[in-house]
Length: 260
Image (cartoon, rainbow, N blue to C red; front, side, top):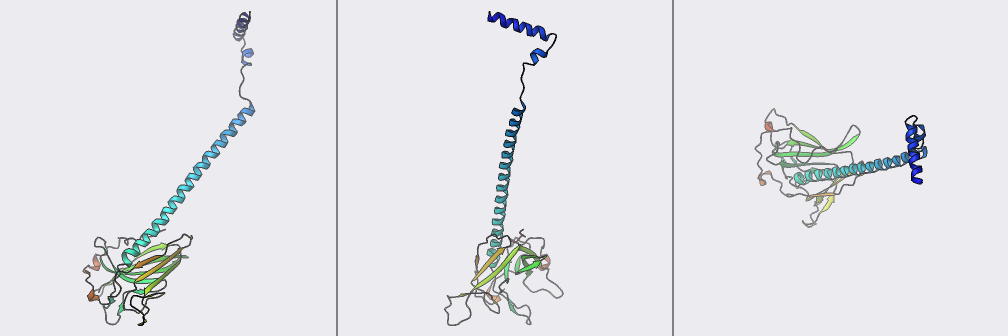
């Protein structure tokens, strides 16, 4: 009997739909407004969580890149001093009898020494390195100036090359370890001095302290000089036959590219 009743109802719906679709259409339910609002709320929460995760990943990536840049900056500066300062030559600027000075001159915030470039570099031979902190456009930076260190012919002028070694510097300090000139001290002893001027020998060690404006910690650098006591140009066998006219100023200072 139930089967017969269901068949009759279905037949009635089909008969009615052939003329009017309203009776059967009303029986089909859609989503209510509350269900739509709940679904949109859940979707919004998922989108917010997704973008938050992406922002955290982007910030972590940026911090990692910044840390790598800082480490690379320290490495570049350390390699520069380790390569050139450690190989400083204790020579006299005796090209003219009127102005004879020792090549190594150190102050609290400036340094001058003579070193060499490798044969593969554009500026081969002896070079005079001058390092000091300067202020340009309300910004402190440490600059390196390189000048060939050998006699020039009459009428010639050296073409200097200047490169920014470190930018955004808040403090730059140098100290020099060696004998303070007291004859009572043993040769193996020494003291740290703020200046190294008017001497005929180089210090044994040079200490470099750098502080940046952004507060990033830079480790203290102590460079040991390979040669400290030779004070005669003839005592050093140095190949210095390069011609200043062949100097290629387009070559960057080895290990001293500008660092942002």
